[in-house]
Image (cartoon, rainbow, N blue to C red; front, side, top):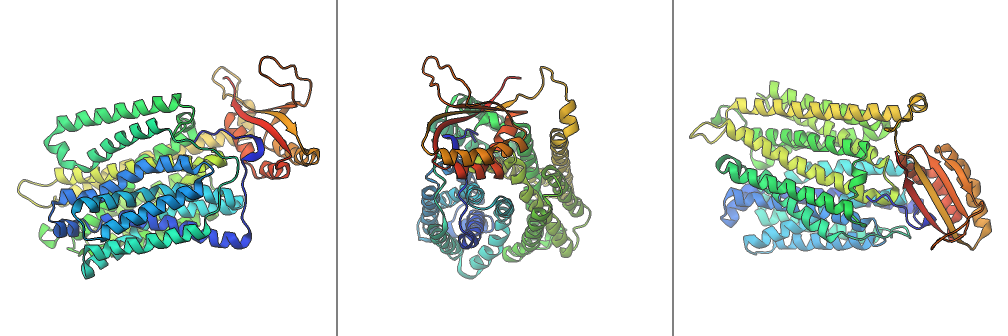
Length: 586
């Protein structure tokens, strides 16, 4: 998420033909759905794995945890690779790894090989952000926004699709048959990607910060380990607290590495932008709440009647409870895409968080009937679908087109950590509500967990409303004009273009004709255009253009606007120039 345009006009979108777009969109959605569904296969199969491989439930739980971990680590790395010219190769190579991992889960090998296979399958979670990058680069602006929202939604509801199918196959043919489903669909995804994925636009470059990736991996390993090992907190609190401190230190070290790196894995400075930081905070806290409710409902449904509550559902039937989650999540995603032009993204996030909070309230107040659980799951799905569809628009509004994959990959890391913590918090609350000598928690423990979830969604709602208020003040012309220019004002942004060679004056003239109104419409003010230049040191006395914007973010957005991208298409290879977007001083 570096936000650095490369080589002037070389970085631009290359829309595919209409017929190719019709094939590209279902391919992007299918791949995102497959990797999400396959990564979630571990959830309904934990008990079956423990029985089949003669391991403890804690060990079997790692078939899910290791997939989440590898996905969290791979996501920012793939996001950075996907920002470069080798995006197609990155997608194909990653899917090949996922297919190989799927084969390991099916072959009659020891438990360690199953874990290795699940880790390889989890790597595929990093492809979701890359699918968004492809959509933004190769589809028209309005179409790409809708497709990116849909990709975000299916990456969530994929769990609801995979859960009941895997559970049914496990009951009919055992755990290997269930994992066989993953092998079939991932092979189909690889073939689909090979047939449909276009090359990335020219002029892109990407370098992976290896040191940053290693430190981030270590930090995430500790975070997810602490989230998954609930017994560690109850039996060895000092050890758990010490590991938590180490994780925080590692994250701080990682941030320092990224700030000092010329090719950071994630541009921490860009992450500090209020819109991006606020969206990631909302995703983190909201993710905790969303996964907490998902965990509570599925666990409550499977609790046997002997506990005094619950419905004693089998794994497969409990998986059917997720159908309302998936269906209404998809519906909410489609509705959100249609209203996003009339309602600001942060307001959509706030509204969706309120809906999820309503799901918690419904579960807390009424869960004595199975229909009530279906209703709560449907409300959760509707809220999660709307939240997931609105999130990309909030982040990408201030993100350069070339950095789509990297920006969204960081958001997905935040989401993964939030989900893991949500599952852990739910487990800790229910464990605290389990009396001595009892196998199941008291019914009141579920109410306590629901109240905690309502609190999490309240924080998410307030964060989203703060984002909406800030966005309103920045886009309101009266507020912008009357803002006092004090030392705390927003730094301006500048375009600096130095034309080294002009090989086709006609293309430059066509570019100037389109670029001038595009820059003016985006709020740019041209201070210099081809005037006299005195060069010193290593400088060259070539044509120089200087444009000022009210903020760095506005300068970046102007470069990514549809009107200016059209001007870049006209410019093509007519010039060689050094083009930079620079942030001014407060």
